[in-house]
Length: 601
Image 1 (spheres, helix red, strand yellow):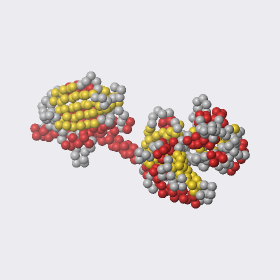
Image 2 (tube, rainbow, N blue to C red; image 1 turned 180 degrees about the horizontal axis):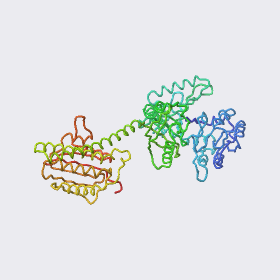
Image 3 (tube, rainbow, N blue to C red; image 1 turned 90 degrees about the vertical axis):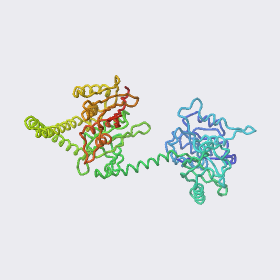
Image 4 (cartoon, rainbow, N blue to C red; image 1 turned 180 degrees about the vertical axis):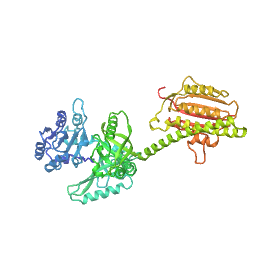
C-alpha cells in the first residue's frame, strides 16, 4: 500500500488558511482530541462525516480522523473531503493501517499508528504539546503536522527539481541504514539500484505531462548503506510551483521485501502444484473445494467450475468424507501437523479409484481455515498386492505339501537303497529341506511387507540377543556362541527384530566350514543408536550374499542361499536402522546392525 503524506507544510502554506480555524476531529479517544486541541489551531469534534465535511467547507484548518468512526470507507470519505477542501491536511489515526485501503492516501494525507491500549494520556499528547516555539514564544500549527509526518511508519522524502533530497524522515533514513544528514542534499541515485533512477525519471516525466495524474505507485529496488537490496513500494507525487512548473517530487516508501519474497515463493509453489501429476486440492473449513490443480481435473474428469464450491462428497464416498472430516478436526485442534488416509474417489464417469491422501492444515492468524490435500492413486498397487497375496498363499501351501511328499520318499530311499542311490536321495532330501526352510522364512517375515505392520516398537536388544543365543545353543551343540551384553539396551525396532537377529546368528553357525564354529554376539547402547554385532570365523559371505545385505536386492541371474539376509535388511530398514558388513580378523565376517535408541528410555 503506498501512503502519501503532506511534506514541507511551511509557514507560507499555513498562511493561505485562517490559523485560528479549528481542526475537526472524528476520534473515539477524547485524549487524542485533547492532544490536537493543545496545538494551534484548536480542535473541535464533529458528530459525523457530514458535519466534518461541512466544517471543512467553512475553512477548518485540518482533519484528524479515526477510521473506525466512519460509516463509509476511508477512501470514499476522503473523496468527499477533497471536493470541499482539496489541500486540507488529513491525518488518519488508526491501530490497523491495513484497514484504510489504497483510496485513503494521496497528497496531504498521513498516517499515525495508535497503540491498542494507550497508557494514561493519549499517545498524541506529548507529540503535540511538544510543539517547538519560535524565539517570540509563538506556537505554530504547521509544526504539529510536521511532527505527525515524522512519526509515520513509512519512509517519506522530497526531491527538488534536480533530484536532490530536500527532506526525509527518520523512518526512511533507518530503512536504508543512513543518518538523515548523510542523505540530505544527496542525489536520488545514491539510494537507487541500477536502472531504477532512469525508470523513476520516465515515470515523473509521464506525470508532469499528464493532465489528470499527479501521483503513481510503483515497486522498485533500492540499496541500503551496507549494500543490501530492498524491494520497496514508492508513491511518487509530483510537486509544482505556483505557475504549475515542475518543482520536484515527494515519495512515500514502504519496504515490501518480505512481501515480494513471499510472492515469489508462492509463485514457485503454484508452479509446482500445477505441474505435478498428483491431484492436489484445497478444502475450506466446511469441506468445500476452494482450489483444485490441473491433475485433479484431468485425472477425475470433472469440470473445474463444477468442483469449486462443491462439497468433497462430490468425489468421494460417505466413508471417505467421514475419514477426511475426522482428520481435519484433528488438524484443526493441533493434535497433529499432517495426516494421511486411504479413501475411494469416484471419477466423473462413475469409476471408483483408491487414493492415498495426505492432509495438511491451513491456518490464518491462528484460525483453522481448511486443509490442503495431496492424493496418490493406489488402485493398481492395491490390486497387484491382492493378486500377489493370493499367489503367495497358493505357492507356499503347494510348496509345503509337495516338498513334504518329496522328503518322505527321499528318506525312504535313503533307508532302503544302495550307497550310490542313497547318496543321491540324500541330496534330494537336503534340497527339499532347504526349500521348506525358505518357505518358513517367507512366512515368518510376511508381516514386514504389510502396510499396517510398518510401525516400530520398543525392543530390548540385549534381552532379545540372550533369548536368541540360548535357543541356538540348544539347537547347535557344537557351536561356541559367546556374548557381551549389557543389562538392557532399549531400541526402536520392528516386531520381526528377533527373527532377523536369529537369522544372522544361525546363518553364521550353519554356514561355517569349521566343525565347531565360533560366533560372538555383542550389544552396545549409545546415546543415539544401539549397535548389535555378530562376528563369526567362517569362510565369509560371498559377493551375492553381501549385496543382498547391503542393497536388499539381487539380479535375475543371482540367487542367495535364502531369503533370510534380504529379510534382515528389510526388517532393520523398516525401523530406520542400518546394516554394515566387514571382514573379521583373521577370518570370517562381522555384521553390524544399528537401531535408533528408544525415546525416553
